[in-house]
Amino acid sequence: MIGLDVQSLDQQVAEKQRLKQNEKDADRFERTQAMEIERILAQAMDEERQMKEFQMTQIRSDWERAVQLKRSKDAEPRGVDFDNANCGPAAALKFSGEDTNRFDRIRLQKEQMRKWIQEQVAEKAQLKHLRHEEEMSYADMIKAIDEIRANTEREEKELRQYIQHSNKDYNREVISFCFLPVFIHELSGCI
Image 1 (cartoon, rainbow, N blue to C red):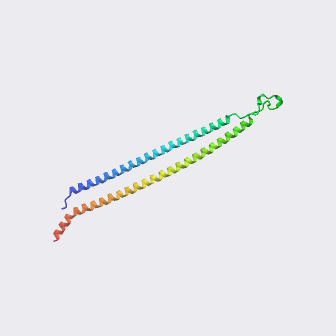
Image 2: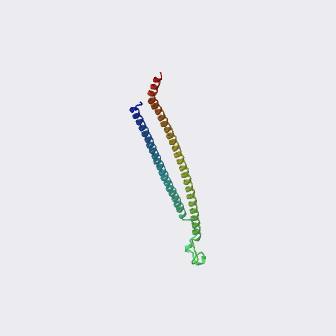
Image 3: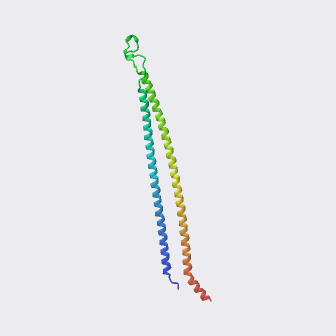
């Protein structure tokens, strides 16, 4: 008659519980690792956004300073040969309804249009550059995540294989331990 080895069954149950606990710990570690990676990526994106805002603020302030400097230079008085305001009608220099500032106004309008176009071109180039940097940063981030994910999956696979091999070895030991007395009993009956 074969008896139950309660102690070895208890050991099996304890070993399975330990293995389940190890798997839970590994899952918990993986979740913690994933949350940390997400936190780091969010922080990096926030820092990048702040840097872009700072750069745009610097560009705007530099541009405004350049515009102010140009305006102050344009506002400086120029040398005048004679005074048009004190000329009489015989000089035929002033006519009623005439736009005396026409040439200056047209020149200022052309300069303003040129500045606006240059601003738009510079702004588009800056946005294109920032967009390109952002895309490159995002691609690098995705690549890093894929590498981490691949490493984690490989480690998880290795851990599962180790657990399976451990279970097989343990089961073989238990089986050989349980059937050894029966085998010895049968051998002793043959002798």
